[in-house]
Image 1 (spheres, helix red, strand yellow):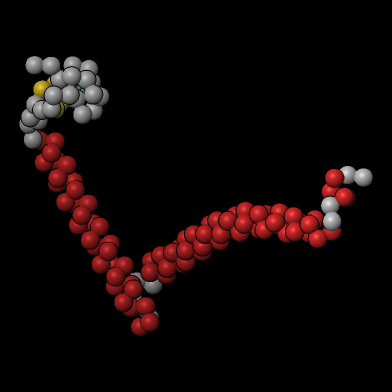
Image 2: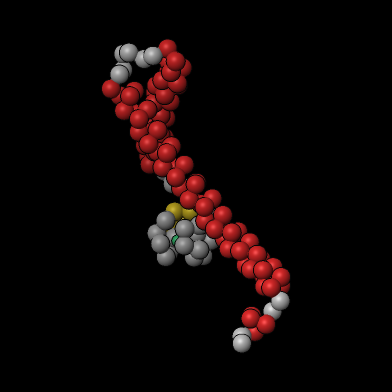
Length: 124
Ligand SMILES: [Zn+2]
């Protein structure tokens, strides 16, 4: 006769219920993660449908989604504008004379006491 066989029936069922609860908690966390993963998949597919629709029907936008399509177009224009500004900013930064000393280790330019890129002392 094993130890568990000697336990009164009620104690065994309580122990079983506690074990069941612990398993349930682990499983519900896994299920929550699976739900989140599936929702991401769902949004990804809805996104694909929307993107396809807007590309395929540039002229015939139903009234029900006219606002959303207008917002999508405004965002695209904003992104294009920001990309142009970024290119100009990058060109500006590249053309500016760097201020500071050349790091003796990595060669980057900095006006700090220690190189912000590799941490080496900048020297004199
Ligand atoms: Zn450095």
